[in-house]
Image (tube, rainbow, N blue to C red):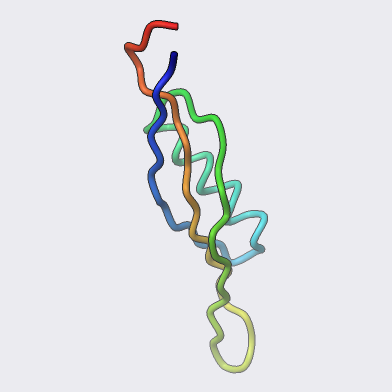
Length: 70
């Protein structure tokens, strides 16, 4: 048996949604162990002077808690 936890994070990129997702997952795996998946809940763009300046994603990241016997 395993027990998972879900945490929500936001990530921003000036390049693309894909880059924002990759950056967010990379950062999450530096802090969280046993990351098993992510659900992209929301995508937004920030507009400045009539053009997209930032791509932002809000995601739920799932990870398995340590110390559980299978």
